[in-house]
Length: 69
Image (cartoon, rainbow, N blue to C red; front, side, top):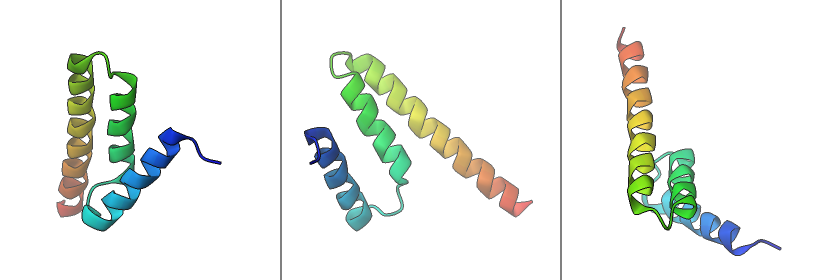
């Protein structure tokens, strides 16, 4: 039997696959985890989500730059 948190993650993953397949599953999962961990500290949640998205974008840019070289 799954727990409510896993059910939520499964639902979000299904929606991601259907509507936003270009978004990486690990990034979406990380954002959900941050939201869970920092529900009482919105500033910290925003900071960490911004960092996670920034890291993802940096990796994407590095991959494109490497492919073009």
